[in-house]
Image (cartoon, rainbow over all chains, first blue to last red; front, top):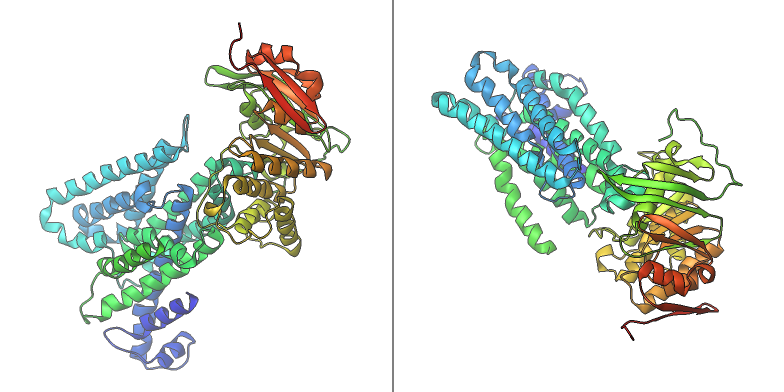
Length: 317
Length: 272
């Protein structure tokens, strides 16, 4: 998987509207003398985009693994805690209502993604019987519907401005330099660190709440912390690359099916690598296959991922 | 995690567990009125009582799974309220009545998770931890099953894995809620022998049991519970008299118990 990621990264840096030999790519990264145009393409266009693909893919893979473990439900993805609905609403709000401040898009998506997740957590984790999985999931579906309705309402009110938002809604990376990453990296860092600390507790939860309690863990706290890590990672990912929640659902499944184990010690880090590799490779394909036209990577990944996923699903059964 | 927490000083001369008047309320309802017990080292204590007497609630309360609302619980002299997560995990292991059986987890994988309370968040298993895992599997008599997926095990095998997970915790007390309730005769005998072996090795065991004959045969002492109270404690022969069985279960029965064999002679149908 690490090899796949390295290969995808190299391809992502080398290929594009202009192909650059791998040796020049390496020379650029290590600061050696290369043609000025090459240096510009790599440093300003491709490197940020490749790094974005890697972190977004890893964030979604980890977010999915965290949520599926926390909710003990293989259908869990960032959709079920409202993040996708919230981030979509936040983005459309800026794109359609305030197109003049388009720079606010990542922040708005991040904010509303987290806001939606916070609503779900308040409904799902507080009060009597808080932490009940069904309650969290039902709360998530309700909140997601709420924000989807909000998004639909905005789109209905300004149908002429909708096309600008499509790219975000279907999910895709853009060549935007380092700006977005500079804003959201602390959220990604917090999310990844939280997720790393949840690896063992999620393994304990796998054996049931009582065994986890016997082992000194608090099941409700584990669920909350893991879901929080997922919410932060998925919101940050959405603010960079739009709605790619499908990756979060599918990656951990692929890893479990391929690896034959559910242990988070394996699933969590390998999901990060696989998510990064898949998104980097997918994005490279999406922007080279019809170059110089770029396709959004979201539908592209779905087209590639669904047949693979379905094939594995049948094979495992 | 013990970061910055004060070290807990266990009193090695105190009983392993000492519970006085534990009380549990859920909502406005008192599920457990007042229950008490003590457990010494190398002792097997059985908690018996009719359905709904509060046995499981009692065990969950003193194990800290649902902390009691009243009374006093001390593990090796230290109040339960002072024991947090990992410290509690090192003093007692709890084996639930109905275990969750995930697919995609091997026997060894599950027992390693049982050992994880001894590790820092991102630390791997040490050679010592691996030895404990291996030893726990052996003590639970599950050698040869290490690579089997949990979902392929029988009820008796799964129960032994649960006990192996608990043993890997390395706690001096094992509390098991109805470990033999779902098992056939042979598997029940196998688990019972294994538990006695653990007791012989110095572990204190608390069992919640339905089967009075089984309790009489394997327990050193029994605690009888009724309507949320512990009403009698002592050796099986002292406590499980026909009079008590009639009072608590409302059935005419006589317990026959000698040399590790036991039977309950029950008057199933009214003879009058």
